[in-house]
Amino acid sequence: MPASGPLGEERRVALINRLIEALGEEEARTLMESLPPVPWHDLATKDDVFLLKDDIRASEDRLRTEMHAEFTKVYAELRSIRIETAAEFKTLRAETGAEFQSVRSEMALQFARQTRTMVFTMLGLAMPTWGAILAVGLA
Image (tube, rainbow, N blue to C red; front, side, top):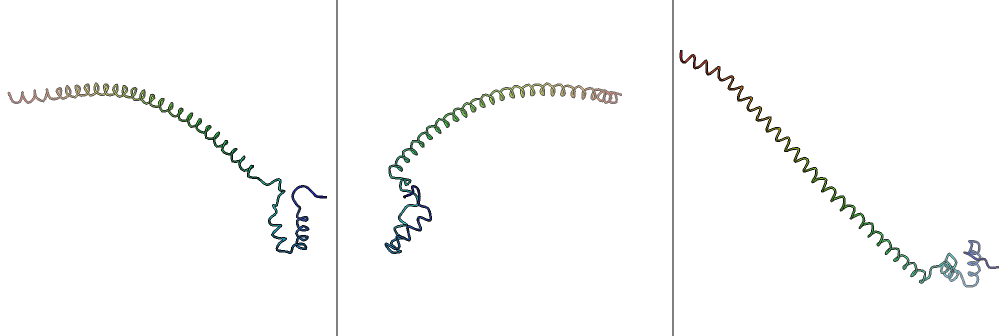
């Protein structure tokens, strides 16, 4: 009674022994080595390989299309972020420029006040000194 499925190790040994008796050892081993280790119906045919190749190509095409769509989406998002960032920097630059202008104006005003204070202080110190020099010179 033939069994379906791969040959068990015991059946392979029995088969090779019988082949050795019928064909000789070298021929028996050559024949056994040419038999696949799996049933014939499990072996892939050229048609199977071509179908698999077509499936792989279809998968590659589908993957390429999906990747292109994702890259397009990511590119659009990055472009949007770049535009938003540029706008934010422009706003920040304008705000910072206005703030610096305000600080410059305040500093100019404070320097003017400080200069005026120093001039009047020096004049206040110089007047008595000039007065004393004039008084000594006239006397």
